[in-house]
Length: 527
Image 1 (cartoon, helix red, strand yellow):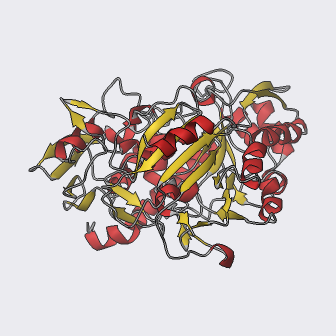
Image 2 (cartoon, helix red, strand yellow):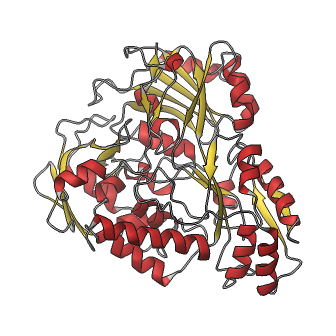
Image 3 (cartoon, rainbow, N blue to C red):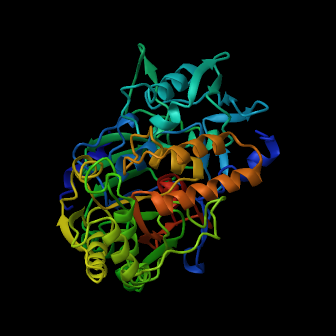
């Protein structure tokens, strides 16, 4: 670690043709919506240099640098910053190669061949090869795997190399979107040394020089990065600040250059501050209130689920909590930005009488239950729960807010409590979103949902190459989720961040994840 980095850490006390042509045209456009920026933040000519200071909202003391154990948005962002994947979602929302130089399927997309970029160097000096790729991805599979991408990795029946720079994936069934899945942050490629992978070391634009889990990290630009037109900052310091007010104060007082997760209720006011720009990027981010369907009282009781869905006034929440920075949700995770979004499904409206009807049918009149959440989860989370309690009370439902600490939320509350708040940045394709969040085999199936018809359609749609038929299947899956799923999904939210006017950003910003697809440190620079 350089002397500057040490001083900063000491001083920081606050805080290919798928029919190949068709595949390349549409494969990753879904959900990766790009925002055109206002004239005040149009990009200048990129240049290298400077030390960037980031105020980040989410991190946990149990955070791990092993991509099998993705624990927070902090590590998720790091996996895109210190690491590289075989493919990437570009700023324009399209899929492109990254560590792969090219890739192509066989006739039915059951086999994909990836030709690797040659001469790529890991931060430890090792040159990347096919063995690194195979071991990095294969370790997400297996009965005991706790990886969030296990459900995706287990569709791979065989990984084999064809020489040092080519990897061939054989799949259980055809998958038109498979290369998109390999852009997941968990699939960053690690070096293999003496038969073992080395977590925390990647091929990304920055090497991690110092790190305190859930607190801060210090990165320096990798001098031999294989992209010579990316990763412009000399060094980067990231500080986890769960409190939104503190992050904004840090930006105003010039403690930070960039902050994420700006609350909608303060975004406009923050943007009026001299020298500060607010960035609003629509995409696939959505808020959820998952119920564990393997637990009482939610198990086997769809009328109770419907009652709770009708008991939320989405219009009020959009206007009150998000201040219009978003769109109405319809109890399924596919947004209008996704390719196979079904616009004809009727929008569920707030209806206390229907909620009472389903509550009575469920035999749950006078229903009372805790709903766990944390303000550190996302800006406005507790406000959303409090508003929900007001809406539900008019339907005879008593929601008891259970405010939890931000540290450890993803390990101690999510997937543990019977009913809790959650959010998803969304995924670039319907298959990825449904596979990771709703399939019976997924470790991140947050409602523990088991639906035979849904899982059958999921596998069939994944292998279907006829676009019209695929659209029909994804529409049915959205409807099943809406009417039988175990999650209240009231809103899609814009990604709102802010930065000093000294920071320049590209003309387009990806919306597949927050902060330019989590690649802001690679794509932004000092003006």
